Length: 157
Image (tube, rainbow, N blue to C red; front, side, top):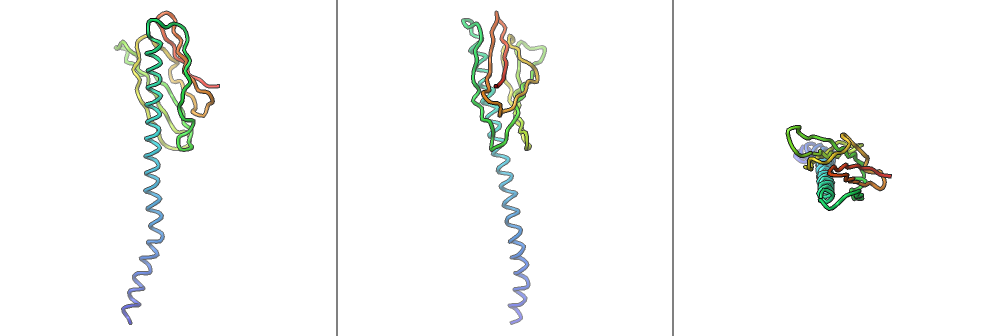
């Protein structure tokens, strides 16, 4: 009979430890998974936005087009219920004949960001360090071509 008491004395603390340890480990694993999924979705949105900017530039840069082209951006307002900020920077090297835009998306209330580079021609301009919030309604991208220069603007109403 003495063996049963010793087994209970050993097993009961182990079982109690498992009761507390399992939820903590499961929570930590799920937090890592959620962070990875949120970062991947942010990266996908940054790539989609960069592709949209590049396609609009190539469309407006065509020789037969003059004037203004306004395009509605279809980026999500939130990613997993978190809004984010979009920042557009000019990272062009002065020795090159093309412009490079760095599109950076950063979450507002949680950690995480993603960026992508967009290669454009030498005849494009935009306001450097332009940023806007993803929750702004009716986000749009406008390309205005005058002569051979293209000016990109972003905004919402």
